[in-house]
Image (tube, rainbow, N blue to C red; front, side, top):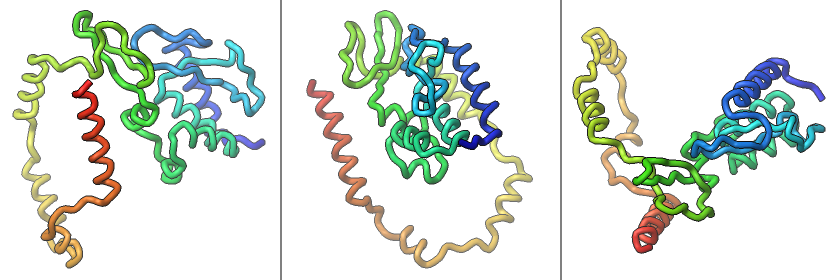
Length: 210
């Protein structure tokens, strides 16, 4: 099997980085994060399911590790493994890796928060809530909201030079008739978008009724 030399050293360094950060083997840090164990040498490529062939990774790191393995080996088994992790093969066709939010949603991983202990952590949706925890993340404090608001109000605007460049770039730019018609017409949603919105509102209502 041929290997892409460009990704060999990258993969080794990434595994070492994750091992130093989270640990090797099966023992996962008890810091509220969601972790997974990754086979350094994949079982499909001759690796063993032993402690010395395992490294602890976050969900995001695990996806990146499999992406590197797929690029490194260019084998069908590695691309299938990556496809199963992200859930949809079309995500791979554009060379895109799922964002953390999409990966959490797809694998049904949620944040929970304990107000009395001010502790938050991640759990799977099929896990039972521990006593004192509720779904959601730690609320943003008023002082933090004030800082964000002040930073937004005092943010620097474009300089005169930048404004002039933008104005020059827009000279002569015209929308097509099709685009103008879309801009004038009412905003419409596709049937799939409507169904997704209805399902989302139904889930919210069901949570409130619980």
